[in-house]
Length: 279
Image 1 (tube, rainbow, N blue to C red):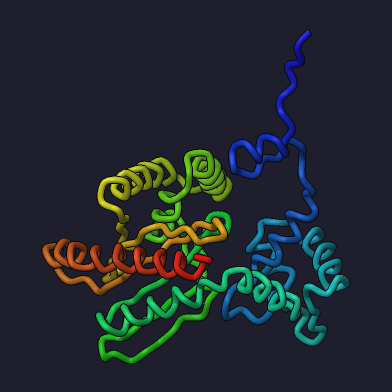
Image 2: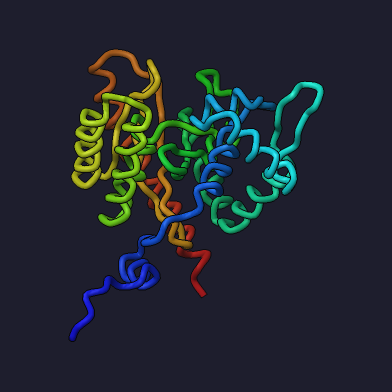
């Protein structure tokens, strides 16, 4: 008699290239990690109430998990201000991640050359759940003053060119998982906009396959085009060029002007990575 059992999750992961889990995970661990994600760039300290509001967890759960995170060295407690801050362990983890992608230094050099030469903003990001996290961002003001945003800044995935391009760069199995997660996140937040957002994402993904880039106007007065980029390690990133907008006619002209620059930058980075990995 043939067995009708499904392949093990390990075998499914190996065959699809997408991490598969067929048994429940640790709910406590997931909630603890959600607390760590509640801290963002520029946020020094969060109280129990702040964390409960940002994570949707009830305060007794927040209090219990925060005590564990303090005891294990991932957070610190300020008794005078009655709040929590991240510990140095977070920086250690960030540096450990960054060290796995030394090719980012090569990419940053090419991004800086383009940003300085054309007076535009150039960024690189990858996904963390339903958000995009900047790895690098090189920006020039209209006066040409050099500025570099802090790596780790977060932006929405659905509304941005970086997010659209990231999704477009995934294989079908990876994209299906990402879209299901995004849909569930919108349900959990009680947002009513997911059908319209999903339709726009589908349109931009099709645009990428037809033209090589995605477009979005997330911030007022700024447009951005983006394309996916796959690192030698197999991670999927997205790179964008953003620019100030004027009239609708100017928008179309700017997209046509900057698209070749973006695609050229992607090609340059890929070629540089290829040379660095050649024996």
